[in-house]
Length: 109
Length: 118
Image (tube, rainbow over all chains, first blue to last red):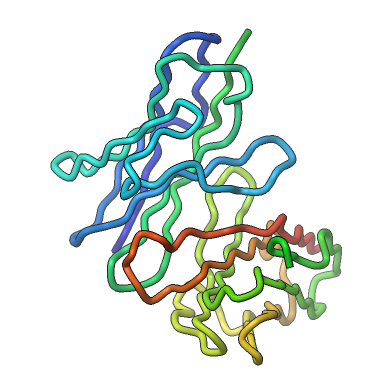
């Protein structure tokens, strides 16, 4: 069965510091991985997906199939990055999206 | 519509009552998902529709939960004999299509319906 884990419930960093939000998954096939973000009082929204290989708001994430990880990184955190971040997996055959428990990122001034 | 619309935004009910939650997806989106999110947890999959049919309802916790999408657009999540443990945020999301592993299928979420069972 697919499973997504995010080991940190809360991550606090100072503005300008690098940030890494961890995501690991278990899936036997070739998954599609996503990061979703929820800012305060806003809807859950897509941040980025591994297949696009893009940088959004300075965030990047690389799929590491050997380590079954999809960690989200940003070299210099900004206060507006404070939000809940969810890693999600979609398998190639079913259409279900499985979400991790989320990590709350708090960027301190 | 411009986005995914969910009504009501808040629903307070008593244990044992029947509840309906509505989702109006983005026009033209054939795939529609329901998730449940409890406090401090990630969205938990309930059911997925492709068109009018439920393609995967494996996440529905028990037979008190049922969902329909009769015309392939609006969907209603129905909960019978509500229990206090049903209290959660119910999220709906839609996607342009759900059958192709094209990388273009991302979820657009609604604002959610917060259900409180007293």
